Each structure stands twice: as C-alpha cells, then as structure tokens.
Length: 142
Image (cartoon, rainbow, N blue to C red; front, side):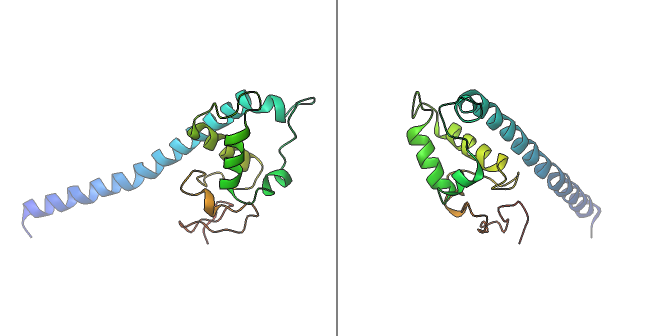
C-alpha cells in the first residue's frame, strides 16, 4: 500500500469516526430542543384549559389519551378541535409538538420516540407497538 493510499484511508477512517460521534450527539440535542419547544407550546396554548383547577378542558390523563387508539387519531382530533377558542390556528408542526408532548409527559411514549406524521399510525396508545426502527414506545429497542 502506498503512503498516499494509507493517508487517504486514515483520513477517511478519522472522518467517519468524527461523523459517528457528532451525528448522534446533534440528533440528541435537536430532540431535546424539540421537547423544550413542545413543553413551552403546551404551557402557552393548552395548559390554561387542561392543567389548572377551573379550566374549561378536561384533564388529559393517560386514560383519556389512550382512548384515541393511535397518535394519528389523537392528532386528528386535536388539530380539528383545539385550541378551543380558535381551532385549527396552529401549524401542523405545532400540533405534532403538542401531541408529542402530551404522550411523553404522560408516559405513553419514551422520551426519544419521534411523534410525527411518519410515525403516528404506528404508535398505538396501549404501548404495545414496535416502531419500524425497532424501538418500542417506552424508548427501548426490541
């Protein structure tokens, strides 16, 4: 093997190692930022009705959320009916953030389970579904 080939291979291995370390770290940071954004959105747009004594909405405990069957059906309802005073005024991304926050904060999905249009049909709210990635709803892998 020539010196040039050896240097190129070494640089390639080094680059792949850096990518293998940085990409998961950035993905974790992005998910953490998304969770913080979701919690803030929920506090601003949902909590006044659903979290406090005297709110006009029912408490959103896991039993209520599970009754929707899947994350997609929950999303459909929330998008059509909420916020109560101004339905359909949030973007789809904001509705997904709110649904993801509800499911995570009530322990119905793991912290790192993505809740979005691509995954929602596969997320059954009884906790028994395994996602295509092999992750279960509690965030573990099967």
